[in-house]
Image (cartoon, rainbow, N blue to C red):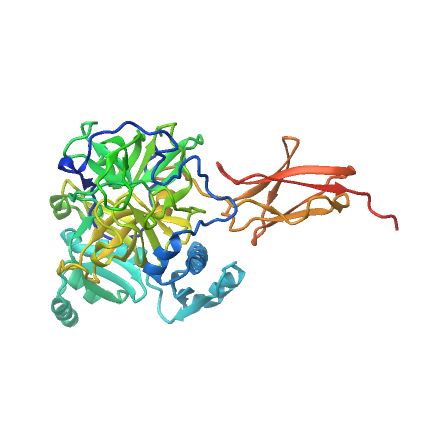
Length: 580
């Protein structure tokens, strides 16, 4: 498995991670392994109940969950996800052209912020985009503030030991903010007053850094971050683990994330890196339950960890002593890590689908699913929905993207690039949800990683936050090179009726709804490839009719990597062009 790439872009937030502990009789004796149709993975449906191929999103049962959390219909939720995806792509294109830009969404509307000098270029790129809703370009007189630049500047100027106080560096709807434990506003104000006297030291405290920084819009005092899977007694939708390789009173559980492909087209599953406990645990098998939070029973065998990384390369982190003794050069060169794992050697009896359990009320976890239709980035303001064996399906707005610092079980500090969302009373992400999927619309965006309570540690505090590993960062940096997500592709539609008479060379047309980037149409005749056809920006495609007269029977299938749609059979009649 390749190591992370060097010299990657910086993104960040700070937290801690572990798995849910199963103690005593709550982890019931091992049961006989069920068949594939009875026990696919947590993100799969039973083999005798395949996913619908006509729509990208199965909505039965999902509408209540989305209405409860977001007060929106499923259609509005999916449309807003498409707007978020389009805005993130515009921001990335601007950044690739050397233009500092931030992006956010609110109430279904997207906003790109750039400096005044870059506004004209930004508007050109927005105009050329295929956004499903208008994207507003906002101009600011000063340089745009980005997490990347603040992260780099922070490491260059603060004392290494001060990193232990940082919970997050986030781009939010209220500007760029630093979250720090025990932040003292009076001390920061006093430092600002003393600045004119030249009394600030060369290496700064968090308060001193904030007093100096003109590009930080605010500081929030925060509590200690906890993981989404700690020592609470919970059941699991997903999988169980133990260091001994057998069920014990200290066995642990995590939630399955997204199903995936290996480079060879074999099944795999993506989850959180910390679930492997730095590679010390062995997967026992699926952990079965009927409702969120229910005690589990051990089900079918699942697979083995093929890769895991929590923090830096080789599950590395920094102890408090190491932070205190680091040289300036070492500290300045710290790069954000990740929290990701891959489960390989999947039990061949299982049937993995590109779908996520909705945990619909009154239903078994495999009864109602949402198809995963691709990958995307979350933006500040994106409505993210996560799923896990403890809290089920829950949605919450993203309030920040950046790097979070997570406390490992060995008391080290580990960094993870990702996103932060509201998590009142730990109702969105809680112990045992670790490793589960996070989506924006119907596209994969993150992996459940950690949660943190407000500094007062009161229940239902508005300061409680959920933290997700960024899948875009995982793939961009090559942590799991060769792996790709499974995703659902809609069935192509031929817009010419069967039996229609067409002239030689005339275009035979069709459409494909919500096609992921890179999808192609394969036209097959008599079992052999006839044409490979690209889609336009709106999902339309066409190919020329053959020259030979007579009935022309063909089939079309959409393909993206190892992901394929249902096949559609069609036919037309080739007739000679009328003579003038």
